[in-house]
Amino acid sequence: MKFLCVECDRQMTFEERQLPGDGTLAAAFRCPKCGRAVALLTNPMETQLVSSLGVKIGGATVPAEPLETIRGMVATGREDAFTEPVGRSDGRTVGLSWSAEAQDRLARVPGFVRGMVKKIYADYAKERGIGEITPAVMDAARSELGLEGM
Image (cartoon, rainbow, N blue to C red; front, side, top):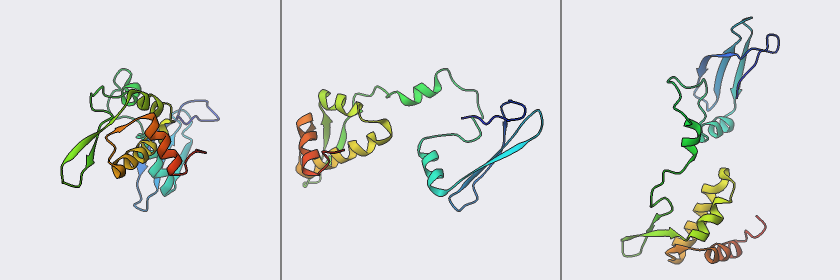
């Protein structure tokens, strides 16, 4: 997102960012040509949303790496990317895995809710002692948890 000066049609430059301490965020931008200023003030919920998305208010202080945005969105390629620890009653931990079909299905969930959906299925599996999440497990969870319409 960029702020443009309406009068000059120039990109405004970042001037200052403040975190007042009440959960809000304030940022000021100025037009380099005419000096016109604009401020952005977010409420606590907006501030939390911006922070959770990893948005950097004011831009980066170091030069951007090639494809930096894309690199941040692509999985790290770890073999255990879909494995989570599952607690057992005897104190040991076993891995929770996702079948390829379940991974494909999870990948079709919009990114902004994917983590929550993944947690719902993982918690469902943990509570029932299920070691691998498959589409059948996902269907059962949706049915039992009343999520069919979602």
